[in-house]
Length: 147
Image (tube, rainbow, N blue to C red; front, side, top):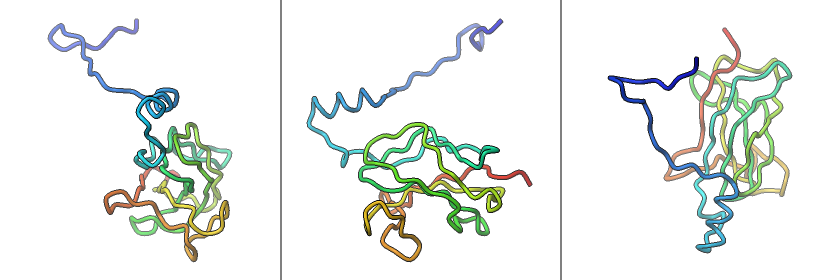
């Protein structure tokens, strides 16, 4: 029953390049690249789960840092409601424990550096500021609690 979608008799398809962690490690080994060549990004943060967690499919970091979940503050990232340390490289299926009572209708997943005390989250009054790429903070908004 599950057949490909078609338009005018032609199967709808698109191509793309996909890299998995093994591919990235192989590329590094073959051409001498390092974690510093990775572009920090967040892929597919998901609606908070009943157990008080947010799941993110993939986090890419060029240095060790933090994946931080912020509540909404008038359409912008607001208070921190959860965070987890992430290493340099590619991390998949990252789970962040959040404070369920502080989940807002819109949430923000944001990357932060680990620049102060190692493995100690120091934000907002510390050195662990948001990661920027080309002057833009690495942040992804997503649906939080139902209104």
